Length: 246
Image 1 (spheres, rainbow, N blue to C red):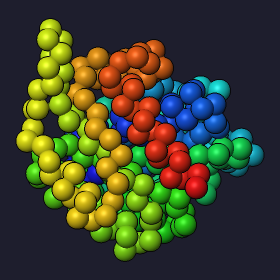
Image 2: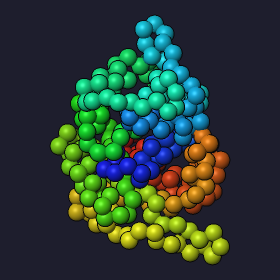
Image 3: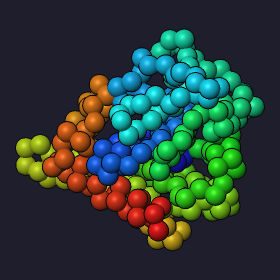
């Protein structure tokens, strides 16, 4: 979850699914519930694919042997086709992805939500109750952290366990001297996590190579295991897995 767009929520959801499927070799489902702005297929390099139907069930697309994906993007006529829907249609789409998709055999289901606490988030919290956990994604900016507090309050009111907060784009590492450059004033995410009694799962650097890999559907954390981003992400993903498995 995230309160604002552009904080890297979809990138983290996609990489968490990749990590579970390709590093831990688990059977994983990845559900893209951002109905009007689905990005998961682009991040995984499968944006030109379509969903099939077998025995009256939607078959999620296999991004890898262990990773199955559904997204509104698979159902659109073209990449540029907009989804101009009000709440009831969004809710119906979410229900269809839950009830009419063949998720048989998966151990983990990662759900990428749109920003905020609207119809999609509420539908997921109600339709899949009880959920094992939620992850809040934020940047260090004060305005982003304000919305994080709302996300956490939303999760607690709907009895959705919060695994913790991921601070994305925490800093930029100079490629020449290695110095950490703080793009945004920091400290707000840590303060919020302490005040709300929620774990700070970790901090991820802003790495242009991660963005470049995502743009062409490459699995950055698999192909670049020794980078600072990948090592930090590995630690965060391990904490999330431990939280869900306990």
